[in-house]
Amino acid sequence: MHVVLSWTSSSPRMALSATGLALSRPECQKGRYQRSTSSVNDLSCRPPATEKERRMSNSPSPPRFSTIGLIGNAANAQLTATLAPLVAYLDRRGRRILLDERCEAANPDPKIPLMARSELARQAELIIVIGGDGTFLDAARAVGPQQVPLVGINLGRLGFMVDIPPAQLELALDAILAGDYQTDQRFLLEGSALRGKTVLHRDTALNDVVINKHHVARLIDFDTYIDGHYVNNHRADGLIVATPTGSTAYALSGGGPVMHPQLHAIVLVPICPHALADRPLVVGDSAQIEIRIAARNTNPVQVTWDGQNSVELRNGDTVRIRRSDFVLTLIHPTNHDYFRILRSKLRWGSQPIP
Image (cartoon, rainbow, N blue to C red; front, side, top):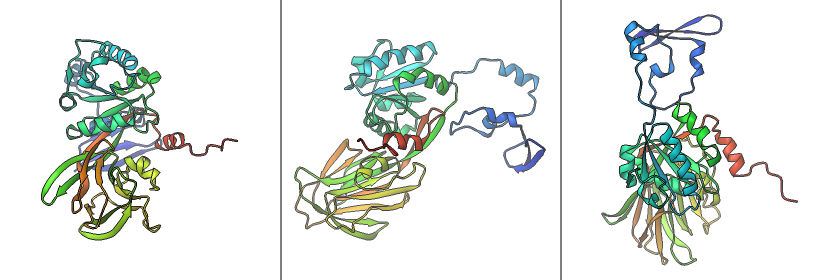
């Protein structure tokens, strides 16, 4: 056990710590570097440096985020116009650049290596996603196992997660590359589709795993279980199982609540249920959720992950959903404000059009 001394504006304050001796002064709070992997030494001032430490501090240190991967929406007409100045900017700052192979047609520099997203995530220290929320969701699933941080440049329409406009690209990245940013941890869902003991497909989702009718406009019949306990039988168009991140997407349109991204919770939202009392249900993020397609169901069913990957289901098939072991780190500019984004994107407080 060691002693940590810290000063308030009027007098010193003494506290106990197991991390070592550190002196903190009011001026130590000026830095706004908030990377989640920061140690105690990143956030506090230390005693005066020794001569050896002063010599070491004069040696050049490697740049923050020295290798940066770029993932974009190749179908977006604005990609080329955004990618060229972004690559030039990163090159001027001495960063090694890796490019998503799907963006080959928009590549402004043939010297930049092209690679699959999984390999790009293994090599990069930061990934910049250029596109809309759909591109971000796709990238998140691809890089999730590597847990490399992501930052988004918005070329889409809504942009809940890609919060840097192209016009502010250099200004925002100047601060981020200098270590002046906010981090945001988001958990993913893991969903497994099973037929008996056979796993048909297993995937992760940042927003939601959805069981829904397939092809025909008729109700489907399924049962839900949580932690092995029977919850309900549903006759509905489907069921949305969403993270707090996904609570402002399909789940919100289905009548679900807006959940703050830091909540440890999962929401189950029935889609157009036949029974009016079949309402959204919020459970803890440790819940083991199981959806069983009823034997009496008479209509086609599918399960989708983030609206992008899907598998057709039969009567008797099961979908098991739990919190994934992977956590995604989002990087935002320091002026990021979740509630301001809600007001803007959801048009809270807007006056009716006369």
